[in-house]
Image (cartoon, rainbow, N blue to C red):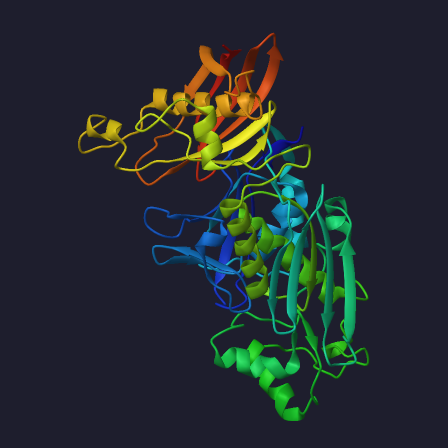
Length: 456
């Protein structure tokens, strides 16, 4: 069982944002279980925080930008890639300006920050995203496919019509290879793009020391003067025999392709959990990365997943056939994942129309904690009874026997989706004991151990 991880202490680094050109300081801080990755704009009043999630992506112009209520943090992909590659589940990232600094153009400086802080194992089990069917994104000559696998693997191809790059390929077989083989790969751009990017208000903090510049057009004296002025660069600028400005030495023969993989790893981590899948891509970029991530979320939200070790599909009619409860006391709306007798993931859509809100409390509606426990107990019933029948063809009954270690850790309100995750700890002679947890937006709000008797 893999456990969640955070860092051991706070660590900081300073630098300049690539696109805004604004100096900033970034601090990684330890965070509790189920916190996720959150960016805090400590330079602003009230220090607003933005959860690193695909639903908060607001711009993809040459980088990944998240925002909420008009507040933004630009260029988060290298930090997210670092956290994904090192298995950091929970971290508070304090930012003193609107953009993450580019530094050397790779994620390696951020990896070194985490290594300096140390990685701390926490007490809560890490949860993964898994698939049962492929998820695709295709647009023009850009393609991304995400295929079921029991671990993370990435295969990527880029093809540029320029001799210095041409067709490049790379494969990440395991995240254990991330630090050595992918974190050092630097960002890149084409010489012909520089003027256009600057006209778009981008690369204000760009530097020849923080990116590979592919010399795809003639390096005229006019262009040399323009680059000197644009970047306030005092050093020599010359054509590179290797196809890169100033003959910049590559860290890998296919460094541009590896950097595309680095970005993709970071963008996929905006799903909020690590994913077990084989990701295969061609000519990808941030827009395609986020698009396929949204397709993945849609697939696991709208479709009932089949677990690799015997999961089954559960319809709403199945729920009605198993549970005797009916409105207003049926508290399981949908089953997302089920391994009969072993585990279940189910949801209750909390609505203002739920009758208990009339008195709990007027003007301040809060779902009672005991009903969260009841919802988990009903989900336990589905987990234990699915696929079983009495001789008369009816499902057996389930009776709630006991509750232990109940804790209420968050408020559940109308509009929330209560996600219930249960595992059967033991089952003997018709009596089962299960561990259950309730989440809202990946935040733990309730947990308990429950006992129930299955039979007539």
